[in-house]
Length: 249
Image 1 (spheres, helix red, strand yellow):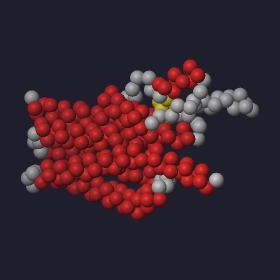
Image 2 (cartoon, one colour):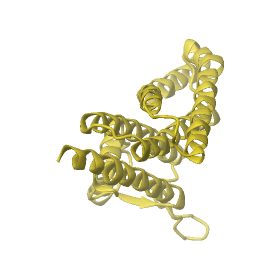
Image 3 (cartoon, rainbow, N blue to C red):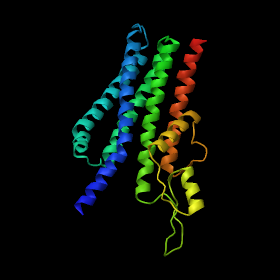
Image 4 (cartoon, rainbow, N blue to C red):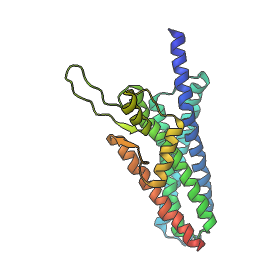
């Protein structure tokens, strides 16, 4: 009994490891971008409007608070669990992605202020937009897995007929094309998405500002997540990347 439980715990730990690594990479990218933003700000003369300076410094403090909280969470809570090879609690996973998301939002706002205050070169803007794009993709990759994984493990994604009432319960989460095909052809729901499936969904959602063709979103949480993802990518592509192309021209 104990051996079977340890096997399940280790399997859960290894299944979540790629997503945790992706989140850590996103935090490193945000830290690198923050250092670049600080470098951009130092190039600005002191004659900037006091309100812009206040907002920029406030965003720096917010980013620093999120980053320190993330590092403390990883060092004090996550690493001890990793050393035991155990699975992280859902609350810890939620706090990690929330802190990483806060860092990304602070950088996104700071980058737009820098564009307004500093005449950056096209190469600099392209590098900043690439770092933002990658970090946002990785963070939402984690978010999609985080929101969609729990219903799957509890068997709540697909419609289920209740024996007593004969009614169907509504599914929620991401419905992948493979699931639809399997359900129609073999009347089963054994297929489970992996890291590549969530990565494909996150990258295509970033490029198309919406879910890829053949994927369905069911449920309020996943739809709100998709809206936030689309808004973030619109800011990256239309505001920052468009400014870089305009500077290049």
